[in-house]
Figure 1 (cartoon, rainbow, N blue to C red):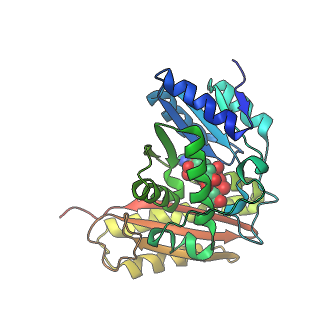
Figure 2 (tube, rainbow, N blue to C red):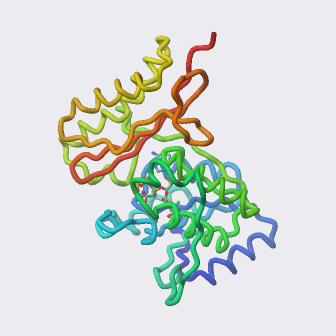
Length: 287
Ligand SMILES: Nc1ncnc2c1ncn2[C@@H]1O[C@H](COP(=O)(O)OP(=O)(O)OP(=O)(O)O)[C@@H](O)[C@H]1O
Ligand SMILES: CC(C)(CO)[C@@H](O)C(=O)[O-]
Ligand code: BAL
């Protein structure tokens, strides 16, 4: 089990990738912010299945965090991450420094339009500008054939796809299903922040998504009735604060009123100082 080579410099990453591509290797890329868990590792496994080389980036990107968000306390544990990646035989880890990614004088930003505006875009202003900018830079440095993203960050996936389409980026975007804890909680690096009580109460996110599917399977087609039931369930945790709960078109993210086709349930809930997101495809019964 060899430890991955850790590349710190942007230029070195770019020249290594060029060499791999020139040798005809197909590069799979998994961008992360570290504090790796099974969700991340499922993306790595998908990349390993489909590509000759796997590059994982570990970078807590400051520009996607707003003022007052958790940038400073975001979990960082590079040694543990490298150990987990070594167990999967990942050869390359790109872990750039801030000054490599944002050298003095950096002043160019990627602004994705409508798809980045609602939901996370509203509650985390500037978030997707930071995500799109760093992902575009990472794509230029790694030059992957395929890049892997989790459906857990559903809107992020659509934002990245929009950018790739609009800017003709030569990379395929692969979506991977959300990996959950045995009790249903979506894996997230931020789960580490939860106290034992909050960890237990965090189950209301998954339960409310399942409740949405149950109601729709039972014939409910009024989106407002379904989101009201979800909110009621979440309110069984008195200190939970809902940022949004919505049923949306899976492509445009516009809110739907009647559920007459598959929709995406999206939610963001704060439990104490921890903000969690989750989502699920909700499918009405076929007639
Ligand atoms: N449970 C999961 N299942 C599948 N993919 C996931 C899961 N959690 C994260 N990912 C994906 O891993 C990639 C890196 O995500 P990131 O490093 O932000 O992890 P995270 O656990 O989502 O952290 P955070 O707590 O910040 O949301 C993203 O494409 C994200 O969608
Ligand atoms: C895609 C990403 C690595 C960009 O910083 C981040 O938003 C994440 O981990 O989902
Ligand atoms: N998982 C998306 C990265 C973020 O929350 O900032």
